[in-house]
Image (tube, rainbow, N blue to C red; front, side):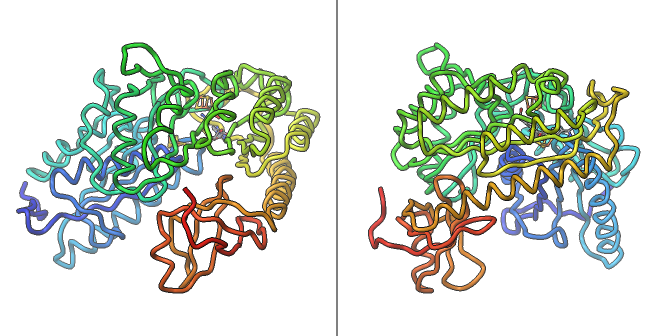
Length: 466
Ligand code: SAH
Ligand code: SF4
Ligand code: F3S
């Protein structure tokens, strides 16, 4: 069957629109899919309306996230049909990411308009799939393999700069099998990229103007990659090495598991100034009974101990976390233990969720599921306290002077937004003409006010802070 999509002749690139759901690894993957598709003539566009190829990079972590995909697919089908009826060009629709991996068959059944289903470990093969469809439509391309070769070896170099703050995936997959979680099934077993590749990518990012790198992995602190001399590096080793790259002034990593918070990594917070004093360390629950049922592999006391060691290594370290309320069997006392943990530790920021039973995970079939109303009440209560803590953390910054990496323009003219060391969005007003020139630079800012979602301040130095 002939397609209406004309292959690029080198003059007019085809248009690609990627919509990203889920975690930061998906954000990174979307950028890499754009790199793959750039090699066959696709350039990015900001809306699906004029796109030749739409990729939904999906998330399966909770039911709501997964369901969003089907409603979006419905909208895309309407858009495609209308455009074709009006004599416009055709549109290819691809589903990538964790829903593609977990529900490839289901997508086929519920959304026949989908042309491509590609899992998170197979997207280096996307260009081949798209090319085959450009040559002849009328069939579906599916690839949800966990190929023996690493996709990282097959990916092209980054085609577009990520900007002053960039993501770099160093580790993927998960061997922990928490009883609520789909990630070990959608992303497969733990895999660490060789340190040499990570360093090379970090150098390329730096050459493109990146000053802050966030190292990504589902279990990033379980990193154990091959070192350039043939040995193995821990995450602490890797961070030390990356901090020596010219132009890389800030390093972060996410997401960590408390069990893998090793001594050398804790020490890195004391020894490596480029390592930012902010750590996302999900705990999920404060009740030992629930932690056990979740298969988290540690107790609440273990979490307290890690936090204490981190704070002795770096006094200004702030923490964020993830929580699940209403895990099967969670009673009032268990929930109170979570509230107590939150009050004891004190978080600068947090994500909290109602437990969502996921197909194929052990907890989903337990018979002591918690009613929705109880989950909602507990979530509201927890979020109340977490929001108060976040506001208090931001408010306490007022009057202080901090270094801010400016990475985007604000909504109003002359407004510029940056990242504090604690990842707070920091808004500063400057002369209109000056705003653009500050992008990508780190400057000293005096904080005048803390707000629920960030900070407001003013520049106090002309020079750039090294
Ligand atoms: N690897 C990370 C978490 C990745 S998933 C870790 O081990 O902490 C991101 C967050 O989604 C989790 O921390 C958890 O809080 C939440 N989550 C995962 N599965 C969930 C489920 N079935 N229901 C509700 N929240 C869930
Ligand atoms: Fe999921 Fe647990 Fe693995 Fe995190 S550690 S990705 S929550 S299974
Ligand atoms: Fe979602 Fe997959 Fe990330 S399930 S949270 S996109 S690893």
